[in-house]
Length: 201
Image (cartoon, rainbow, N blue to C red; front, side, top):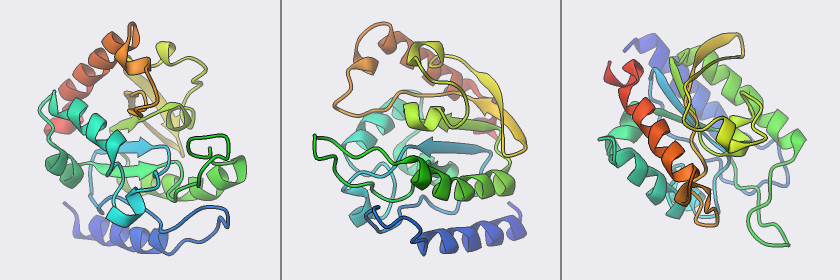
Protein backbone atom coordinates (compact mmCIF):
# COMPACT_ATOMS: atom_id res chain seq x y z
CA UNK A 1 0.00 0.00 0.00
CA UNK A 2 1.34 3.41 -0.96
CA UNK A 3 1.58 5.79 2.00
CA UNK A 4 0.86 8.66 -0.36
CA UNK A 5 -2.33 7.00 -1.65
CA UNK A 6 -3.51 6.30 1.90
CA UNK A 7 -2.78 9.88 2.98
CA UNK A 8 -4.73 11.30 0.03
CA UNK A 9 -7.65 8.95 0.70
CA UNK A 10 -7.74 9.93 4.39
CA UNK A 11 -7.71 13.61 3.45
CA UNK A 12 -10.53 12.97 1.00
CA UNK A 13 -12.56 11.16 3.66
CA UNK A 14 -12.01 13.97 6.18
CA UNK A 15 -13.38 16.47 3.64
CA UNK A 16 -16.28 14.17 2.81
CA UNK A 17 -17.28 13.84 6.46
CA UNK A 18 -17.63 17.63 6.75
CA UNK A 19 -19.84 18.00 3.63
CA UNK A 20 -23.10 19.92 4.11
CA UNK A 21 -24.14 20.69 0.52
CA UNK A 22 -27.66 19.20 0.70
CA UNK A 23 -30.00 20.88 3.21
CA UNK A 24 -32.75 18.24 2.94
CA UNK A 25 -30.38 15.38 3.71
CA UNK A 26 -30.18 14.13 7.30
CA UNK A 27 -26.64 13.96 8.69
CA UNK A 28 -24.19 12.79 9.69
CA UNK A 29 -22.27 11.88 6.56
CA UNK A 30 -21.70 8.11 6.48
CA UNK A 31 -18.49 6.68 5.03
CA UNK A 32 -16.62 3.43 4.96
CA UNK A 33 -13.00 3.18 6.11
CA UNK A 34 -10.19 4.82 4.15
CA UNK A 35 -9.15 1.56 2.48
CA UNK A 36 -6.77 1.67 -0.48
CA UNK A 37 -8.35 -1.13 -2.50
CA UNK A 38 -8.73 -2.44 -6.04
CA UNK A 39 -12.38 -3.15 -5.21
CA UNK A 40 -15.10 -0.55 -4.58
CA UNK A 41 -18.65 -1.17 -3.42
CA UNK A 42 -21.14 1.59 -4.27
CA UNK A 43 -24.38 1.67 -2.30
CA UNK A 44 -27.36 3.97 -2.82
CA UNK A 45 -27.60 6.06 0.37
CA UNK A 46 -27.50 5.33 4.10
CA UNK A 47 -30.67 4.33 5.92
CA UNK A 48 -31.89 5.96 9.16
CA UNK A 49 -29.71 3.77 11.41
CA UNK A 50 -26.33 4.01 9.65
CA UNK A 51 -25.51 7.49 11.00
CA UNK A 52 -25.53 6.32 14.62
CA UNK A 53 -23.21 3.42 13.78
CA UNK A 54 -20.93 5.54 11.59
CA UNK A 55 -20.61 3.00 8.79
CA UNK A 56 -22.56 1.99 5.67
CA UNK A 57 -24.79 -1.09 5.57
CA UNK A 58 -24.89 -1.30 9.36
CA UNK A 59 -28.51 -2.40 9.76
CA UNK A 60 -30.93 -4.97 8.30
CA UNK A 61 -30.04 -4.53 4.61
CA UNK A 62 -26.39 -4.82 5.61
CA UNK A 63 -27.01 -8.09 7.44
CA UNK A 64 -28.57 -9.49 4.29
CA UNK A 65 -25.80 -8.20 2.02
CA UNK A 66 -22.99 -9.46 4.24
CA UNK A 67 -24.76 -12.80 4.40
CA UNK A 68 -24.48 -12.90 0.61
CA UNK A 69 -20.76 -12.13 0.77
CA UNK A 70 -20.21 -14.67 3.56
CA UNK A 71 -21.62 -17.35 1.22
CA UNK A 72 -18.56 -16.81 -1.03
CA UNK A 73 -16.08 -16.61 1.86
CA UNK A 74 -16.04 -12.82 2.41
CA UNK A 75 -16.83 -12.19 6.07
CA UNK A 76 -18.10 -8.73 7.05
CA UNK A 77 -15.15 -7.38 9.03
CA UNK A 78 -12.60 -8.62 6.50
CA UNK A 79 -14.73 -7.10 3.72
CA UNK A 80 -14.89 -3.71 5.46
CA UNK A 81 -11.10 -3.73 5.94
CA UNK A 82 -10.31 -4.67 2.34
CA UNK A 83 -13.00 -3.04 0.14
CA UNK A 84 -13.62 0.69 -0.21
CA UNK A 85 -17.31 1.32 0.54
CA UNK A 86 -18.78 4.33 -1.25
CA UNK A 87 -22.33 5.40 -2.18
CA UNK A 88 -24.30 7.54 -4.60
CA UNK A 89 -25.30 9.78 -1.68
CA UNK A 90 -23.58 9.77 1.71
CA UNK A 91 -26.35 11.11 4.00
CA UNK A 92 -29.76 9.69 4.87
CA UNK A 93 -32.29 11.28 2.48
CA UNK A 94 -35.08 11.21 5.07
CA UNK A 95 -38.43 9.45 5.03
CA UNK A 96 -40.89 9.53 2.17
CA UNK A 97 -44.29 10.70 3.49
CA UNK A 98 -45.90 7.88 1.47
CA UNK A 99 -43.67 5.27 3.13
CA UNK A 100 -40.09 4.06 2.93
CA UNK A 101 -37.00 6.22 2.48
CA UNK A 102 -37.00 9.25 0.20
CA UNK A 103 -35.13 8.79 -3.09
CA UNK A 104 -32.37 11.43 -3.43
CA UNK A 105 -33.21 14.05 -6.05
CA UNK A 106 -31.08 14.89 -9.10
CA UNK A 107 -29.36 17.86 -7.43
CA UNK A 108 -28.39 15.76 -4.39
CA UNK A 109 -27.01 13.01 -6.60
CA UNK A 110 -25.06 15.63 -8.60
CA UNK A 111 -23.68 17.22 -5.40
CA UNK A 112 -22.43 13.85 -4.17
CA UNK A 113 -21.09 12.65 -7.53
CA UNK A 114 -17.91 14.69 -7.07
CA UNK A 115 -16.95 12.55 -4.07
CA UNK A 116 -17.41 9.34 -6.06
CA UNK A 117 -15.49 10.71 -9.03
CA UNK A 118 -12.59 11.70 -6.76
CA UNK A 119 -12.56 8.21 -5.23
CA UNK A 120 -12.38 6.69 -8.71
CA UNK A 121 -9.43 8.96 -9.52
CA UNK A 122 -7.62 8.07 -6.28
CA UNK A 123 -8.24 4.31 -6.26
CA UNK A 124 -8.62 3.38 -9.94
CA UNK A 125 -10.53 0.23 -8.93
CA UNK A 126 -10.42 -2.92 -11.04
CA UNK A 127 -13.80 -4.09 -9.76
CA UNK A 128 -16.84 -1.98 -8.82
CA UNK A 129 -19.87 -3.57 -7.12
CA UNK A 130 -22.91 -1.27 -7.33
CA UNK A 131 -25.77 -2.33 -5.05
CA UNK A 132 -29.30 -1.45 -6.11
CA UNK A 133 -30.85 0.28 -9.12
CA UNK A 134 -29.85 3.83 -8.17
CA UNK A 135 -26.20 2.80 -7.78
CA UNK A 136 -26.15 0.67 -10.92
CA UNK A 137 -27.69 3.48 -12.98
CA UNK A 138 -24.69 5.72 -12.27
CA UNK A 139 -22.69 3.41 -14.54
CA UNK A 140 -25.07 1.71 -17.02
CA UNK A 141 -28.72 1.79 -18.05
CA UNK A 142 -30.66 -0.15 -15.43
CA UNK A 143 -34.28 -0.14 -16.57
CA UNK A 144 -34.43 -3.86 -15.73
CA UNK A 145 -32.30 -5.63 -13.12
CA UNK A 146 -32.63 -8.86 -15.10
CA UNK A 147 -30.48 -7.33 -17.86
CA UNK A 148 -27.63 -6.38 -15.50
CA UNK A 149 -27.43 -8.74 -12.50
CA UNK A 150 -25.37 -11.88 -13.07
CA UNK A 151 -23.02 -10.31 -15.62
CA UNK A 152 -19.51 -8.90 -15.58
CA UNK A 153 -19.49 -5.69 -17.61
CA UNK A 154 -16.53 -3.50 -18.52
CA UNK A 155 -17.61 0.11 -18.08
CA UNK A 156 -16.13 3.63 -18.02
CA UNK A 157 -16.68 6.25 -15.32
CA UNK A 158 -14.83 9.49 -14.59
CA UNK A 159 -12.18 8.67 -17.19
CA UNK A 160 -11.47 5.23 -15.73
CA UNK A 161 -12.49 1.74 -16.98
CA UNK A 162 -13.23 -1.19 -14.68
CA UNK A 163 -15.18 -4.41 -14.35
CA UNK A 164 -18.63 -3.97 -12.86
CA UNK A 165 -20.58 -6.79 -11.20
CA UNK A 166 -23.89 -5.44 -9.91
CA UNK A 167 -26.04 -6.69 -7.06
CA UNK A 168 -29.73 -6.08 -6.30
CA UNK A 169 -30.54 -4.03 -3.23
CA UNK A 170 -30.76 -6.27 -0.14
CA UNK A 171 -33.76 -4.39 1.25
CA UNK A 172 -36.29 -6.44 3.15
CA UNK A 173 -39.00 -4.60 1.19
CA UNK A 174 -37.75 -6.12 -2.07
CA UNK A 175 -38.63 -9.64 -3.18
CA UNK A 176 -36.53 -9.49 -6.39
CA UNK A 177 -33.56 -11.38 -4.95
CA UNK A 178 -35.74 -13.98 -3.24
CA UNK A 179 -37.69 -15.25 -6.28
CA UNK A 180 -36.68 -16.47 -9.73
CA UNK A 181 -34.99 -15.40 -11.89
CA UNK A 182 -33.54 -12.90 -9.39
CA UNK A 183 -32.48 -15.59 -6.93
CA UNK A 184 -30.36 -17.44 -9.51
CA UNK A 185 -28.97 -14.23 -11.03
CA UNK A 186 -27.87 -13.07 -7.56
CA UNK A 187 -26.00 -16.35 -7.03
CA UNK A 188 -24.35 -15.99 -10.44
CA UNK A 189 -23.25 -12.43 -9.59
CA UNK A 190 -21.80 -13.57 -6.27
CA UNK A 191 -19.83 -16.34 -7.97
CA UNK A 192 -18.41 -13.80 -10.44
CA UNK A 193 -17.39 -11.53 -7.55
CA UNK A 194 -15.80 -14.42 -5.65
CA UNK A 195 -13.70 -15.38 -8.68
CA UNK A 196 -12.61 -11.87 -9.64
CA UNK A 197 -8.81 -11.47 -9.47
CA UNK A 198 -9.07 -8.05 -7.80
CA UNK A 199 -10.26 -9.78 -4.63
CA UNK A 200 -7.37 -12.21 -4.47
CA UNK A 201 -4.51 -9.70 -4.56
